[in-house]
Amino acid sequence: MITIEQLSKVYHSKGKSVIGVDDVTLNIDQGEIYGIVGYSGAGKSTLLRCMNVLERPTSGIVRIDGIDLMSLSPKELRKARQSIGMIFQGFHLAMSKTVLENVAFALKASGVGRKERRKRAEELLVLVGLDDKANQYPAQLSGGQKQRVSIARALANNPKVLLCDEATSALDPNTTKSILKLLQEINRELGLTIVLITHEMEVVKEICDRCAVMEEGRIVEQGSTYDIFAYPENELTKRFIQTVIDFQIPEEQLVKSQGTIVHMTITGELAGESIVSDLLQHHDIRGNILHGKIDYIQNQALGMFVMELTGDRSEVERAIGTLHDKLEEVEVLQDAGTADQSMARAE
Ligand SMILES: Nc1ncnc2c1ncn2[C@@H]1O[C@H](COP(=O)(O)OP(=O)(O)OP(=O)(O)O)[C@@H](O)[C@H]1O
Picture 1 (tube, rainbow, N blue to C red):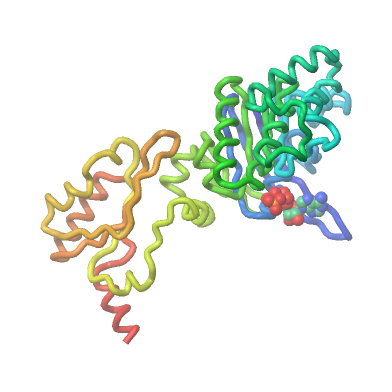
Picture 2 (picture 1 turned 180 degrees about the vertical axis):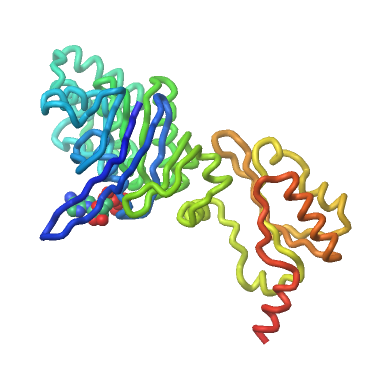
């Protein structure tokens, strides 16, 4: 549905060049929810705004539903943009218009008659759960309600794609959840392709089918949200994941430890199995869980455990071998001898 090839955007200001997006290639499928995550300045907004040519790329290709947006005349581009809705962190509502008028206004530009505009706007307000607020003004609404109005407005022209620019960043966690749920419902009911940019990995975890991580204008990692959480490769991706699933062990705990400390990721059906208890049953070792969590991402279980294994050194090594046989991701964070050395250093 969205094809981006070797897209770059360079800004020129005060005699200096700033790279906003640097050689990005990305394919987003019809009907999926795609997240782009990165810290401030990573280039997320620039990339998103290039997708509807609000920002004209310096080079590269943007195709939506097969149409090369860069090749269109201004008039053709205006028409093409009707199939690309957009919502923003700051809502961008007309404060002097009622909720209903805000939504209906989006249809005026596309030549829909007054009566039809009203009817369609009323339907959209039902869809976003705000039919009882039709005659109120934006100032009378909460942040979550304002975002619902802007979602209704973005859907007015039956777009195929909805671009969300930090749509939940100004909202509290509960309201964020309800807006994400609404986006998911719209995605499922209308088959709408949704692209959202965010600096919160929790948002990606909540609703995205696939995601990309951006840094300095580039995509450093992309894949299914589940795989990105289970097998992150890039250091930045790992940092983002730790904001949601933190399995860091405090330094003092590591120094105190007498055993071998292992981090294991248990994915899919294995997450429901008794991997840990089997390990202790079949090997003459002791295991102490330092961290453990089973999370659900896209309805699939993902287990993360950090264990301290103690016992005869060769038996611990055999136990780690068993883990390697069963699991794709096993990492020894600290060997048994290391703690003694750390303690010696500390003394
Ligand atoms: N209009 C502009 N003129 C000059 N430089 C710009 C412009 N817009 C963005 N940039 C620069 O491009 C880079 C990417 O900015 P962008 O806003 O896309 O990042 P972002 O990841 O969306 O960050 P944030 O979440 O803070 O908006 C930054 O270095 C920024 O300073």
